[in-house]
Image 1 (cartoon, rainbow, N blue to C red):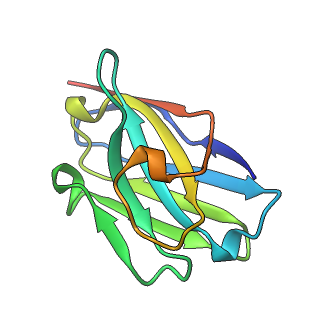
Image 2: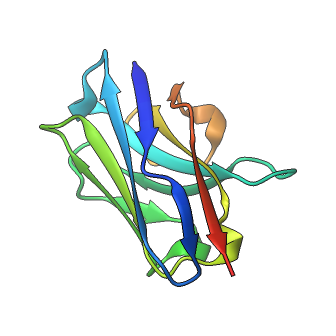
Length: 123
């Protein structure tokens, strides 16, 4: 499975970005998907996850009400809509595939990773 993340950039605090992650080489519609982020000098942090049908989602507390994860199985793509961005959201954002059909916050339980896309929020 190959993942290609895109949509990052520089935005002012309070602004919005939508990240996309296109998957290829596997059966996307069967996979649970997650978004993680990693700021300089910090560990990789769980952001959001979604089940294979898009009916169940889970968020870390710091992004609840601001971020929305969604997917389009016809396009083999998962999205992360980020609104009301804050400087502390600045990080490299990664998408990941989980093949065991569980929603999990643990990076080591994800099987495939994209290359990351940089999100920078200025104050």
